[in-house]
Structure formats: C-alpha cells, structure tokens
Length: 275
Image (cartoon, rainbow, N blue to C red; front, side, top):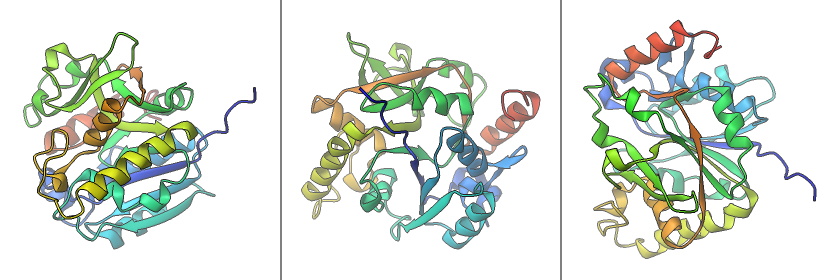
C-alpha cells in the first residue's frame, strides 16, 4: 500500500478581534500580535511549512485588510494564500467562522485557531498521526495554568479518552479538568478519509439551524455561538473516531495580556525550541 499524500492545505480561523488583549489588538487582528521574533501567524506558518503546507486559507473579519497585508508579508516563498470573509464576525463564533470557508473544506487540511503558537515538532507529530481526524492534545496543560490568573483552567477545552484511546469528550466544561487527559490546543488534521465525515456533520448542523441560530447545539446554548469543539463532539457522538496526538507543552494560547507576556518570555528563553 502506498503512503498517503501529505496534507498541504491549512485553514486558519482568524476572524475575531481578541478584545482580551486590550491595546495590542486596537489596530491589529489577534494573529498579527508580536510574540518575540514573530507575530502569532508567523509562528504558525513556519510550523505548517515544516510539514509541507503550501496552501493556506485565512478566514478574516476584524481588520481584514491589515490581516491580508500582514499574512502576505509573513508567508514563506511559494505559499499560496486565500482569504475568506466572515462578515458576521462580531455576532458569531468559531464554528460559523469555519463555515465561511466551507468551499475550502473539499480536501484534507489542517485546521487551527489563530491565537496559538506551536513548534514544528508539534506539526510533525500531527502529520505522522494515523487517524482520519487527529486532535493535538496537551497532556501537560495544567503546568501552563499555574499563575495564569486571567484565563482560568475552567476555560480550557479539555478532553478525555475512551477505552480504545480515542477522544471521548472535548470542549469547555466537557468534563472536570482534574479528570482530563489533556487540553485540545486548537490544532487538528483532517485526513482524506475524514473529510466527508467532517463536512457532512457541518452541513447537517448548518441545515438544522438555518432558521434557528438561537437553538442549542451540543454544549453551546446558541448555535450562533458554537465552538469548533461542538462540531467535534457531534462527530464523536456519531461514532467518528477522533485520534489524540498527545504533546507535552510546545505551544501556547495568547488570549490575554498576561498570556502574551508569558509567551514572549517562553520563546525568548528557549530559542532552541522556538527557532
């Protein structure tokens, strides 16, 4: 049997403003906030390019013009960029933002939040994963929350595993953090065999809620405010196997000013890990 073709597309969900970063996002979209030597998006593009990604779709909303200019300046040579607009970015959340790029979900892809940084070893581990939909899960997540007073542990998208080692529950308040295997970092890969399952679940959810944006969906009280993890939980409930790719650190979420200060200190103190 031949090896599967590498995944070369990535979709970055980057429409939100990131108000909790205060003055850092007054003029910039969140993904262009500087973290040490690079903006958040710069760290992401470098780690994705390390596994052969050369086709990146960016879902934009807040300061979309600034995002496009910044992304073009950051993209490695030969990387194709496509921009998709979420015109409702002030009123919807991550899942409906992803839905704006539904036409781009026609092939295997990495999906990532726009407010996280991660190292090339993380993307290499994800690229080598065997599943149809693989989620990066940080088993050392509790260490990151020590002293993280502006973003408490209860806000983490925690996850546990079933007896077969697959993801069983995932999302905010999906389970008590002390029972969690780890935290979903906001990065996943959809292999060729998982595309139909993911898009089918997304299409079905969109159809059911076409005129019912205020109706609940999974753990979201309103479909309009649903997270990506709500779709992932929907897939799990349908019996689609989601495979964990377990890491220990090697990433950070930048959601608050405190997160930013801590992330800058991390990348500047460990240049061998964050080249």
